[in-house]
Amino acid sequence: MTGTVETARHRQVQQDGAAGFFTPRPLPPFFSSSGSIEAESFYDVAPLKATLERLVDFDRINSGAMWLAVSPISMVWSLSNDNDPANRWMRSQVGQLVSSYG
Image (cartoon, rainbow, N blue to C red; front, side, top):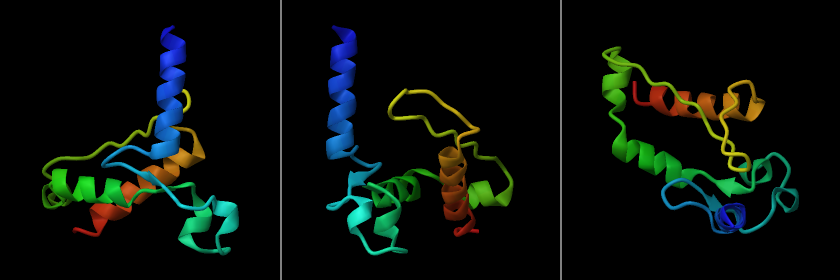
């Protein structure tokens, strides 16, 4: 039964997004103009940027007083894989967000 419930939750998140993290785009990427941000992913991560801006002290991170480690988790498998190119991309996006406050 647990597997069925988890599968249903995963599908709901894929369909509806996750508050404060991402929302599904109105159209799939293959219906968007080539080269546009909408053509690169199924989800809009603007809510994640807003959440990070609200919760993270970027000035403190950029001062060198502390460091930030980011390790994205697969939504499908609930596992971390730091060797996955998509995870490297996500870390670079967070890194750009952090450096933009420096």
